[in-house]
Structure formats: C-alpha cells, structure tokens
Length: 318
Image 1: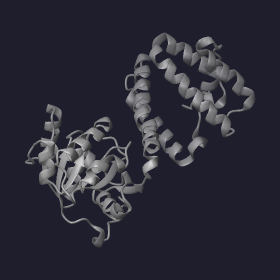
Image 2: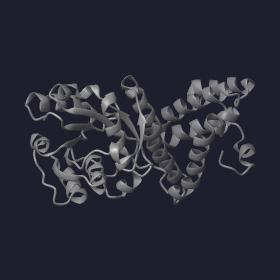
Image 3: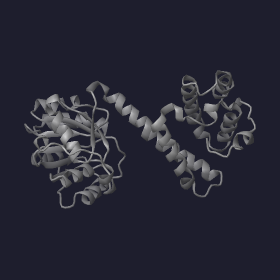
C-alpha cells in the first residue's frame, strides 16, 4: 500500500498536453503515468523500431513525429534521451526556435540538474529535472513500479511545488537534490543498481558452472535477505569470508575463479578489498586477521587456500 501523499489541489499543475522526445524505456512509461493522472499525451518522437514499438504499446493512438513538432503540440515535454545526448538536444531545440515560452521542459537524466536546460530557459521554457530512481523495462509493469518510487528533483525554487506535484501525480516521492550534487547522486545509484545487475549475472553464471540447475531460485532468498539486512543495518550486515578474515577461503575462491571464470577475478578482488576496508573501519574484521587477507587480495591467487569445510560446518550462506 503506497504511503504517497496526494498534493494539495492548489499545488496541482493544470491538466497538460504531454509530449515525449525519445521513446526509450522511460519516456512512454512516465507519459502513461501522467495520463492516468489526467494529463493528455499528444505526441511522441522515436527513431528506432524498438522505440516505435514501445510508443505504440504504452501510448496507443498517440502520433509519432519529429522532436520539434512534439514541442509545438505539448505544454509539458519529457526529454528522455541518453545523458550524453541531452545537452546537444536542448541546444538544438532552443536554437531552432522549437521551445515555446511557458512550456514545461522536463528531463529525466540522473547526471544533470536543471542547468543543462539553460538554453531552453533563455527561450522562456520552465526547466525541471525529474529523475526516477528505478530501473525500467519499457512495459506497463513499470507504471505500477512507480508507486512509491523516489525521484531526484532539481528545479528553480519557484518551480519546486510544480515539480513535486508532477512526481506525486506519477505515484512517486520527490527527493530534492541540489544542482551541484547531481553527479554524486547519480554515481551512488549506478554503484548500487547497475553494478548489482552485473554481480548477480556473474553469480548465476558461476552457479550454473558449479552444476546448480536453478541459480535464480537459489540466489533469490539469499540476495533478498542480504539487501534487506543492508538497507536496515548498513555495514553491520556484512558477513562472509572477507568480513571474517578467512584468508584461506578467499584464496581458494580466487584460484577457482582464475580456473573457471578469469573474467570475474578483477571484480571479485576489487569488491573484496572494498569489503575488507569497510569491515576493518567498522570493527567487524579483526586487525590480526586482516594482514593475511589483504596479502591474498594484493597477490591475487598466491594465497594459500584454507580448509573450506571448517567454515561450511555452520551451514549458512555467509
């Protein structure tokens, strides 16, 4: 059950015509969410066959057209393009006169704040940065996932209420991010979410190589518990051979990875070093055990494997 509070009617933006520039996985979903709140999608731009299919799925009967034409038809325009494309797109739209005074121009980049929209601001647009902290599939399931989703919001002070109201209308929860903190905010999300996908995919590959028939079923409860513990307790949730200082077990891991999946060794060592540093700093890793462990991590596979059976006797997945 969502705990999102509905905005005061006085703070709600008027019913708006909505356009989407960039029919990737995000734009059509946000437009569909705004449609549920009473706004009216009127135009969408998309170049690839995949983007056109996405637009047809999420926004049926909404016409496809060029970006400049989208801006001509919409009161609120969602610029949902890749980060590196956004500055050039904004400059081009402003230089060609496509931006209309009073038009709400919203980008969904996590990296940028509102300043990337300065060329449009000079043309009279109202700039908003609304970044959903969510991974998208570009399908209707994403609309439901927006319920309770945090949005990183950056906008001029006079547009703050409008920005927050739009987020709440989409089912999200606004979180104000200062302009200068946007890159750090985005780096944090990428570290937590994007790298997690890589780690999980690698873990599933290794489990298959070890003979596990359903690695997803094995990892699901373990990773769910680990995530819940980490969100509740932070570094106090650290477990496993690195946090315990089991240098022999870590050396055995590295040796096996070098043999069966050498492409994973550098990532394993980097994450193990980061885990060791945090475990030491929080008193979880005993200093007298840290020296051998750090030696193994520094030397890669040159550590001496210990007896994995001694650790496994406890019967958990730490």
